[in-house]
Image 1 (cartoon, one colour):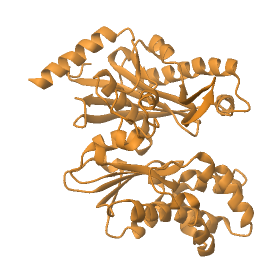
Image 2 (cartoon, helix red, strand yellow; image 1 turned 180 degrees about the horizontal axis):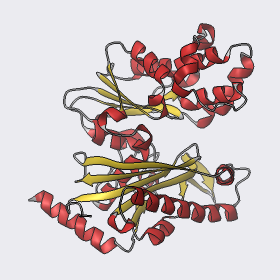
Image 3 (cartoon, helix red, strand yellow; image 1 turned 120 degrees about the horizontal axis):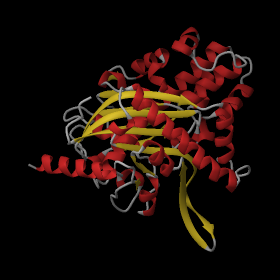
Image 4 (cartoon, one colour; image 1 turned 60 degrees about the horizontal axis):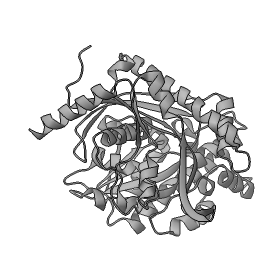
Length: 408
């Protein structure tokens, strides 16, 4: 197979997300660096964890149950799984691992504390992502960039969110105001003004997402169903207006951005409390209510916190595949054009992994990729730590050649 031109890098992005149920892996071709970088998604796969691994990750993230020996072992175990995912993804795309230039691995977050805590007489912020990059580099032979959040936090930022940088590179428009709306476990938006600069984007969490809907479906069907396939339940029901009115008074919706919704605010516990408070509501109506809550929280967020209602809303995450949710969004924003990531050639499920492929490419080009206006950092910094693989010298020669070619 012919190699890509020297100015193009083949990069695999890996992430084990907040739900800790598997690895998302995306293979991309990336040309150039900075906000003008060009990205093409070539392949995407998801690698679910076995139940024992999900439990191990859950325990590692639990303050009461986590033990340092288990955490150390899990770091290396996840490194093995991330490496296997990278090798398999390359093979499924018709490539040998040696034909991949770079891996960007976010790994699995087990602790993130942007607020200072006292330790040893010092007040410190911290974050910890595991999935040992040295294991990935050794097993694959590919240079790895990992540990993306720490540099931003060292510069005074929260280390989060980082994906809005990719939103800007992928979706910025010269003449359209755009909202990149992810509806995954929770909802979050990146607002990009038409012709705007990177430091003018506005990202924040909008509120509930798929976790609330999925939990209600699972609980009310005793696990027979795990999500609202095709939005059929919501389409068969009607939102309960009294419940929806109370949900819209949630304190999170009143908070001014920047803001991040923690798992407890709209997760499993929230869903169980909702079901306990309204036990007589039918499955269909409760799912319709949760779906409407997700949509109305997005509308409220845009009306209150964005400079104007966007010309385009580009939906990603699991919500993009829910016809009931998409229909409600269209009704909530009748004068806005609605798209999904797929309309731009991007698998909605692949976006986060694709973002870390891009961030890794920026790191290897020595290109800052945090957004201080978003994270609160004092300055732009280059993100991530580089673990050289067997291809490191060839990679750096290729990067240098690409930079020289672009500068001519």
